[in-house]
Image (cartoon, rainbow, N blue to C red):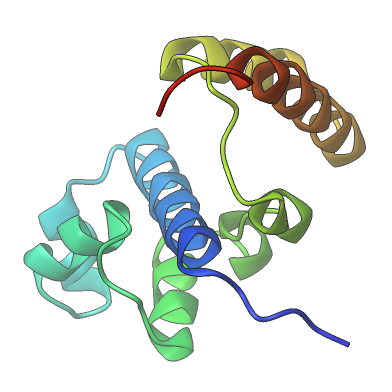
Length: 128
């Protein structure tokens, strides 16, 4: 049986989706306006999608993937990571460095799981 996503998990899903779209767009040296024109949707929509603030319909995601000459699956975050419910508590630059060194999805999941365990252990007893 499928679990229903919490708001935190849903927000993380769209945030990661937006990050992957932005990374792919930048890799191909496309501006937000140029990508928007290829689909066509507004540049503001691309901005909001990349920020994870716009929950994009599937047909728009397919169009974005096609415009970026990539498959939709590569833009989607790993569901195990989404259902874990949170990102590791590390600075973004540190996470990027770790992700660049880790090759396979299985290795990523294992590493993220480990970092989550370690960081959640260091948060115990802290006031929130």
